[in-house]
Amino acid sequence: MNQPAALAATGVTKAYGRQEVLSGIDLAVAAGEVLAVLGPSGCGKSTLLRVLAGLERPDQGRVEAGGAAVTRPSPERPMVVQGSTLFPWLSLRDNLAWGPRALGDRKAGAIVDELLEATGLTGSADLLPRQLSGGMRQRAAIAQVLANGPPLLLLDEPFGALDAQTRLRMQEWLIGLLADRATATVLVTHDVEEALLLGHRLLRLSHRPARVVDEVRVDLAPPRGRATLTDPRFVALKASVLAQVLDA
Amino acid sequence: MALREVEGDAGLDLGEVLGPSSEIATRRPLSGWRRVLAGLALPAVLLATWAVLSGTGVLSDRIFPSPGDLAHSAHDFVAAPRRAPVPGVVPFKGAAVRHIRASVGRWAQGYAIAVCVGLPLGLGLGLSRWMAAALDPLYQAVRSVPITAWLPIALVWFGLGEGAARFLIFIGAVSPIVVATADSTARVPRQLVDTARMLGTRPRDLARRVYLPAALPGIVTGLRLGLTLGWTSVIVAELSGSTSGLGAMMFAAREVTRLDQIIIGMATFGIIGLVGDVLLRTVARPFVRWADA
Image (cartoon, rainbow over all chains, first blue to last red; front, side, top):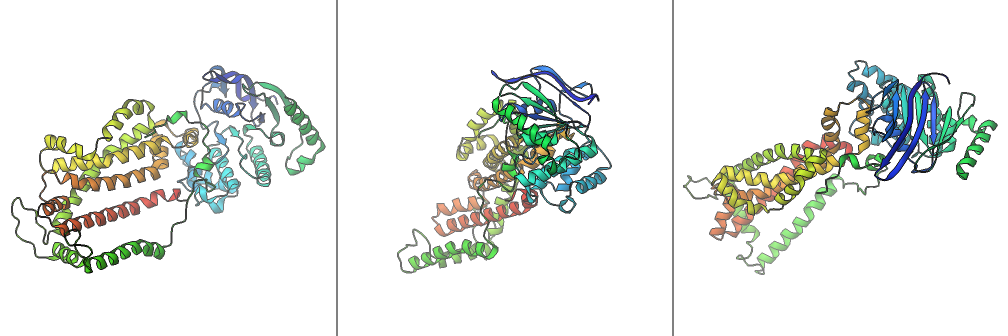
């Protein structure tokens, strides 16, 4: 993709005390692109995403979004993590309205109605988060951050806590949602299948301290979904990436 | 109190902390009539045992008055005609309303001050690592001083009377409010705060919009403990020269060895403490219902 980068990280290095977590990470994601970041558990993927979100400062290197340095969290690049990030004391409707209300958007009600429709949660609008299933909560958490219409989305293993069937349904739903909105996305996962199904490009990280080991372009015809999983090109790509991961 | 560093606790799984799949052991409460029956069973057994022991003479009146004597005294306390007040004398007959009103009034005033001081102080300790580091050691030392040890200094500072009483009730009530507020504020999952920031919430609004509501179930527990401990401090407070109030009545009864009056005072303390707790829980319930498992 030759579009300008929605987010770019250059030489990002981060350590906690003497423990180096990230080592000179370079990455860029273009508008509308889904960049899957694949790495073993504990390699520093979540730290990388927190740095990209502006929740943590890199020790070295630079993160830019829309040409401006990222120094603090912003509604322009929200992050969704594994497990619900909904506010448990608020109804689903009020959770979705939080962002637009915080930014003083007078169309909060209409935005929420649209998102409830898009997530298939209209009938659950007045329920508390604990009254929703795991899959519903994750859909709602993604809808919550999309309410501010961000150009970039950061996803940290958002479906990691779900069972396999629900995860696949959620992945299909997310593919459609991101395509409709042309939202640039950085998806962090340790699941090769998820990375290839959702990502347009795949960035593989090493064990801690995380470095970029290689980059794979995922040229699979849209629309992607459960049929993609049996596409010979997908199967071959998955075998190739799995071999690299297991040999690392 | 373990005051955690708010920004230093990475990796909380919010689904586990707050979701319905919570690992926290919870039991379904008993249904209404079962709860009432279970609550009444033990007092009924104790009452029957007491009546039998008193009736057979096993339990002497000098150790514990009989249920009949106690009922008679309770009737005097509540319904006997009031006598004209005599300066320096703490009345018993017909004085229930007067003593209850005096004690509850002091309790309410001391508790209100404790809430006004305890909530902001607890929030500050929970939110600010610097404030926690600076104040926590001193605060832990101060709160370890027993309530009775505050009595002499309260009398020196405020003299005999209402000021000392309110101060002692405040001291009794404020600690659990501060501890619970600070601890539950410091334990608010970082993911909630991060999400609020990423949704555009201004940093100055985080305390009001995120920390306070998220910590509210813990704060309510502190408010309940503070209410109870404030109420138990009333008896100490009424040692500070009061001629009205349940504590003053009980100490006057002790001087003339009226065990029945002392026990009536204790029972009244228990009933009013229970009513206060039920009222507070009822008021708080709509705000913390979301945390019910």
